Length: 268
Image (cartoon, rainbow, N blue to C red; front, top):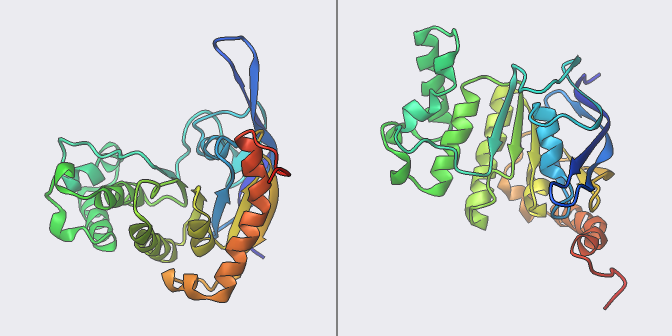
């Protein structure tokens, strides 16, 4: 029986409006169990609380109501050990080369120097960055800089990796290839991966399960099992089954997306 790695119970987030003093009910309630070692993606309309959900799991935003637990322990107001986060924004330090960017988190850890080097060498190899080890971010493409950010997370050996639209700024072809790299990372590390994305094809290709969220306040409308094998790659997009998954996602999301932009779903 697969163990539960992360458990969300009744998670709700309400923000205060600083201008009017009113409230915005952004998220929830959400109930969700993430299985250890699975790849779980979340899709939903713009503004539905996807990133807020990820931040609650990461310990970056406390829920207004409900609880989040990681490996059986409640998550407080900081990122717990064992969780790594990669955001969409380029988080490379421009004054550091690739190796030093990757080492940022490890420098504060008690890990021995030889083990640090082993981890960095492994991350460089896995992300295809060996020949750029001493290049600076300005000398790299956007996709390569994002690989540096993923490598920085990887060397910390997280058991749970949270990805917040990490490929949103990349073109379609590069996103597919970067997705393959993430799948390799997932298989090699055995980590649980939680991905937020606005791209239905990305979610359909990468995930074992996909959570579909409603318009704000975001709730999980349905969780879809893709049924892919663990050794999948981007060629899954060529299959009829892939088309069925993406069509199902859009059928669920079309009305919610119209609601999110203030249009009547019944209008022509």
